[in-house]
Every structure is written in structure tokens, then in C-alpha cells.
Picture 1: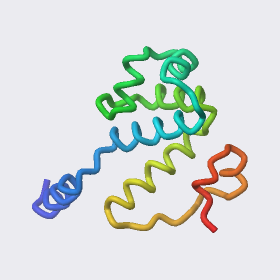
Picture 2 (picture 1 turned 30 degrees about the horizontal axis):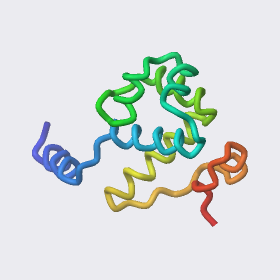
Picture 3 (picture 1 turned 90 degrees about the vertical axis):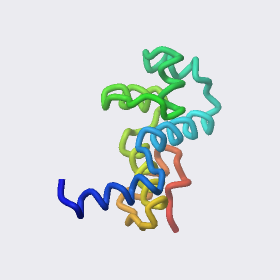
Length: 117
């Protein structure tokens, strides 16, 4: 890797953005906002309770298949969950992400906190 690439990586790491932690925080937030327990979601997603807990705490990197299963269990589209993760990372990096998720789509899936007025 060149010097510029290495410097960029150091800058990102120094801000403390870890993708698995952001994904875990968003999944936990969605689950809690629905009033669901870890046990309930782990059963519906067909993943062990301990593993789901580790994903939510940012200790495990979930595969795309597992993330899709968890989102299905939470009744939230994967795209909506990833949009929330992208917003959190952008905020941590001092960036603004343009809203590309249609308001109707956000409302349909009960995530009004994504709606920007």
C-alpha cells in the first residue's frame, strides 16, 4: 500500500469507526425499538442466542447471509439497516450522506427516524 493509502487508514482507525460495532449497535437499536428479546430474534433468525449477542456487541463479524436472516427476523429490510449504519459511520467521519431512501419506503417499514424533512 502506498504512503497516502496508509495515512488514510490510520485516520479512519483513529476515529474509532468499526463496522461490526456500528452494525451491532443498529441491530440492537432496531430490536429494542420493537420490544423484542435476543431470545425471540435469535429463534426467528435461526442463530444461537450467544452468537446474536456477540454480533450486537460488535464482537463478531456477521456474514451477509446472517445479517439478512437477522433483518428478516426483525422485519426490517437489509437496505434500511445498512442505511442506518452508513449514516452512523458518515457522522463519525464528519460526512453527510445524501438521503437516497424514499420517504414512503422508510415509513412503510416503520423507521420514521430515517425520514428527513
